[in-house]
Image (cartoon, rainbow, N blue to C red; front, side, top):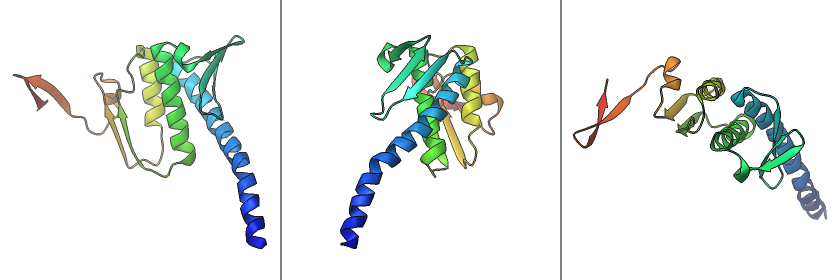
Length: 152
């Protein structure tokens, strides 16, 4: 009976724990989103069904309705919030995280990514040089005579 009781308690607690964790991650993602965009006029919400929404002046837009830059900022904000809140991974790869972002938003995003603490390694693959200002190492690859070559 004790085991059955524990199973029931854990089963009932699952949705409550999920709801609380999603709320924490949503709060963190909203803050990161505002920081990346450099504006606090819109509010990102990550819902319990893992949908990304942005509210601005009382109007809610779903993820597909956002511009390319807003989608990139929103998706990265949620990923960064997840990384900060529930992951013990200390190795991160970002592939073209600044695509569709203007210069100010690229700089804001770079600041957020570079501000992640306790990472042993951070790899960023990008066509722009936004991250070079604060990285320890960078590798440039260029196409030379039809082949990719390390340059620099």
